[in-house]
Image: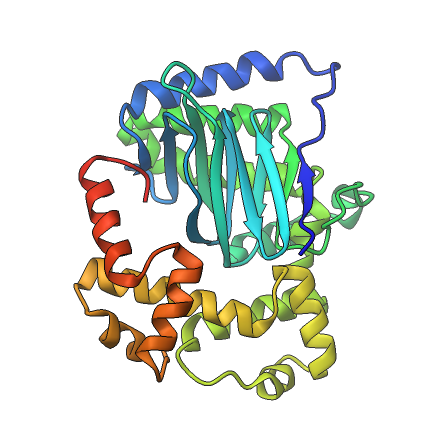
Length: 323
């Protein structure tokens, strides 16, 4: 299979202030997280990332979010597409997407550092309603994956400044309770009126195919253990089966069956890791009828049989390594 790759565009020399602002954000993250991994913060929806060396491939499910890399570089595999992004760029995930990620540029002296905020699609829709069409109208950029639910753009000074102020609020819990939601909304607003705006609007525009696929994804997320009925899904969003399949592939870079399988395997992994279930029990819980079939697909996705993978993950957690 040929894998298409999209790398972050070169930073325009006309915006030199972005580099010192990005270094400032990196310093803020570095001083607040000194161990590797994903760190939840006291501000709801805000997470900080630190990785001190290039990592192996890690499977996860991206929820709707906006992530700014302050230092280092990462590659994300979504279906048959690979997206590479690094400092001075940001990524928006408009829907829930199962991906494989790998940090490719990090060291003890210059760790990979990133900041992520969760995005509520309802808040995006509310902001779109408040904005005049002329204010948010932008030409589609040359990114070849404009219909994709995961895309990268060059970060602008407004987003960098707002993200920096948000991280600084971690030092002022009283201020954070009032100001953090406002700054998070500001970040979403700045993305909407910037390069990423047309893509984000697609997923909250009721008549768009992207919005219909987001509704299908919401159903699959809650009913992934049930048999897949594409005709029923298509009828629920007023699409033909062929149109749903085509649009679903555009947004997620995979078929509905592949998407459901990834959700099932991620949930089974969570059940074994967090609730201590045996592999066979977890496989039945997520909709598999054959434990051996489950084990084969699990090994293909995560690189090891269920039991060995869970033991490895628990060991990494004890060593504060990313899982």
